Length: 344
Ligand code: ASP
Image (tube, rainbow, N blue to C red):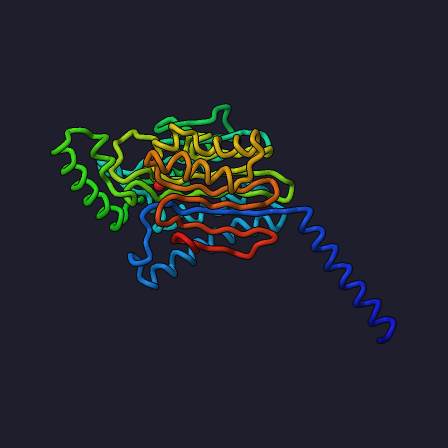
């Protein structure tokens, strides 16, 4: 072999070794979800399934691109969540479910793992991208959570145009509302108990939410969640998605979590921060901590749903205790993964 060729080969292998070393030293990763619930393969046509997978891929790639170019985890999760908020497939933004009264009330939150700064909005009716407004609350206000009219007044001050609530109307969500109301009214007629009646609703009426968690090249974690809440929820009901520690949590010392599921349970069991506390104080891996909380704590008491988790090394875990969860992930060491059903 000629000496110059040999030198070129040595140089190339050195570059590839040092690239590997570099990527091993600087991990970055993103995971997203589009809701958990009774999601079974038999309920999809191949075309529908394909469309969901394509949208999840588009969302995870949008976030990954930000990270790959050296952007912040906060920007990556916002980009990914906005793709899903703009789609009518998911229960957030454009695809938000209806309240019992036939309107849409949206919740969202975001958290910066570097500083534990957070922003959240609850019960907004005229804001196209609730995750964007949550971010503005974090960045440009002295508060963590704004609700309803006050949140919308703040949006206007921030230059966000308010839109008509009926722009969130979709036929498939309306049909779901009518079905849910039928079931609720029937259950109420027999039990006279609103809580019990709500419990009687199947899981797919309770869930849908979107979320994202990411680690950027600077080692900063972030988490965000956006939702229309639960179909036929009572007006004014606020779920776990805007509650920091319940539906969303991020701190650089442990992990970043975004949840989807029956929000009341996630609030009562402080799910997102419980997972990170197990990592931080008990030295658990995110896989152990996520499994303990989702399957060990929530499942036995009927708390259905799931979470997406990323840690400071770029490890990803996506546990859920329902038949499916729309999900996707990608990292500097892992190719794009997309899943919908259990066991894939
Ligand atoms: N967790 C959301 C809520 O309770 C619903 C969902 O995840 O689909 O509002």
